[in-house]
Image (cartoon, rainbow, N blue to C red; front, top):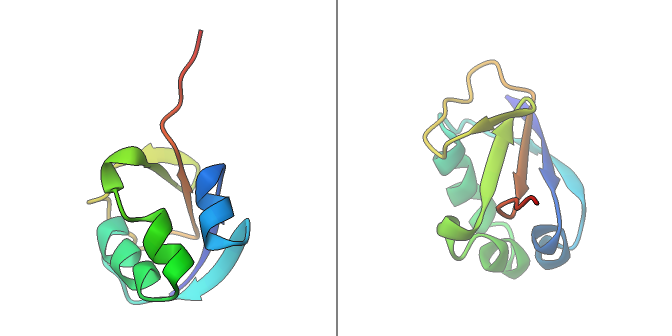
Length: 83
């Protein structure tokens, strides 16, 4: 499957781009992350501590074990705070 991957905030800085298109056979977001880590040192740095990031699957907040079947977009971003 082909996915659009979006990166926000410091993840974008470490990866070096705001988005990329990836062809993958990953079953879950966690599997996708493992494949992304292997792409470059910047990707590895961005995903070095999974506890410091959040993700959304087709614009819905999701856990790392979320399935990717039928998904078109995955976004990664730091935890959000509000006031």
